Each structure stands twice: as C-alpha cells, then as structure tokens.
Image (tube, rainbow, N blue to C red; front, side, top):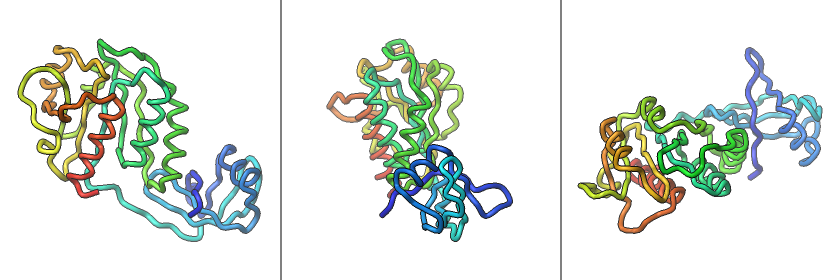
Length: 235
C-alpha cells in the first residue's frame, strides 16, 4: 500500500493543490507524473483518490476522482502531559499517539517539569508523517506548552483521570475507564506531580487512578493509557 499525501480540497472545486513540500516529494522524489493516480488525506476524515492534473514541483494540482469519508470515533481521547526531557522521546510520543488514535495532546508545565519548551512545528510535521504512514483519517491536535493551571481550565472532556504515585485511594485505570465517553488523562513526568497539583486536578474533577506497580517513563505511561482507552472502547 502506497503512503498517501497530505492536502486540502479547494473550496467549490474538485481539486487539491499540494504544498511545496508535498509537491516536491510527489514529483521529484517519488517521480509521479501527469495522469498518475495517488491518494491524499486531509486530516478531517477524508481519503481522496486523485489523478495528477499538473505535475508542478511547487504546486502539484490534483483532480479528485473519489472521496471516502470516515467519521470520528464516538468518543475522543485528550492526553495532557508534562513533556519528557529528551526531545526524541517527545517525537516518539507524538508518532505513537497518532498511530494509536489519540485525538489531542497538550503539553503542561508543572512545578517539577524539566523541559519548558517544545518544537511545535517539528511535532506537527511528525504528526502529519505518522498520519500518512498509518492511514489515520484525523490529524492529531497538538497544543503548545502552557502552565498546568491554564491547561486544566481548558479541559472539556467529561471523563477525567489522573494517574499518580502519591498515597491515597486509587483504582486501576482499566477499572476506572468507562466506555463511550470523551476522556482526558493527565500524566506527569517521572518525578510525578506535586501533592498541590494533584489536589488541583482533583478539584477540577480528575479521578485518581493507578497504572499498576511499575514506575513508567512519561511517554510509556501515555501509550499505556491510550491502549487502555482503546481496549475499553473496542477500538
């Protein structure tokens, strides 16, 4: 199966014009030419079958021959996470989040955070590449890093969970997750959130949960909770 390209349908037309980056990859690298058939994802649920109308290196124009639309899952998963120190692990986190079907990733700056910046444009490119490689229909939404208190104020999901390591009553995440609900899961770095931050999350309707006895890396914890969410929802 050939990897699709990424682009948007032009308003009121039956055409797509690829970006310069996508055009060069299509025409110069992969050597597609006039009349060849390719596929395009728009990150909004559509997979387009197209033929090349103009094989311009900067603006490759495509005629759409067929559209296949796939609706979103009936519930979404929003991961709020303190970014790992190693940028390679952040890249990996974004790639796997796309492949496993998360809807949104927000980076939160907590009191114990080591990293205070992320390379958002780079992560967007990684997200698009992973979307194309995995044939994911929807583009991952990535939010730039912001203070945890600000992020908590923007949460819209009804089901909210926070795995943490502090003492107190916690149940396993598989038992806490309810199916068919928009979900937000808050994940700290290896040093965990402070007790004050955990209380703030609980005050914002986050339910304390456990990921088991093992202490996981931040990005591993994120993938584990995505897997749990998919299992509970049958994805």
